[in-house]
Every structure is written in structure tokens, then in C-alpha cells.
Length: 105
Image 1 (spheres, rainbow, N blue to C red):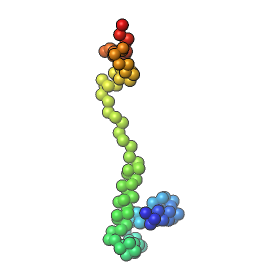
Image 2 (spheres, rainbow, N blue to C red):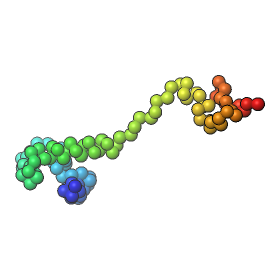
Image 3 (cartoon, rainbow, N blue to C red):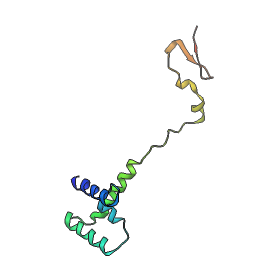
Image 4 (cartoon, helix red, strand yellow):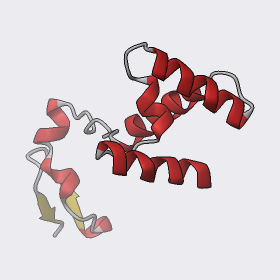
């Protein structure tokens, strides 16, 4: 994790984005410099496709951090039934069909 943090800080200094250098370089257009950097990182980390793995991991992390669950789907009946929002008073109250609560007498 130390390499990831150091690479992300270097990315912040060089590009203005807190993003690992390998992920940044992997996203660049194909060039000799990009290919040389990717080969160097493969040798440094003894891992084939190191920059591709880092870029995929970074993309998944961004997707998970930006994930916002969908609001709960409620039917029309659930939206119009206000009696569900009323507290349950047990046997002394009942919920009528209009959604209100009436005291049993």
C-alpha cells in the first residue's frame, strides 16, 4: 500500500490529480515513452501488465467511491398510505382505510 500512496502523491504533484502514476501513464496514447515506462514498471515490480492492473484497480475504486444506491422503489399505494408513518399504539388504536389513526372506545 505504501507504493500506491507514494505513486498517488507523485501523480498529485505531476498531474494535479491524486491518481497513481501507472494508472495515469496507462491512459496516455501509445508512444515510446509510455511503452518504456510500462516496461520499466513491469521490471521494477516483477509483474506483467503492472500498469494495466493499477489502472483497472484505480477505475474500480473510483466507481465504488462514486456509487450512490438507487432510492427505494415505492408503489403508488405505499406513497399514499400515510398510516405506515404513524406510530403503532398497539390495541388502543387502529388504522383506518384513510390512513389515519382512531382511538378505540
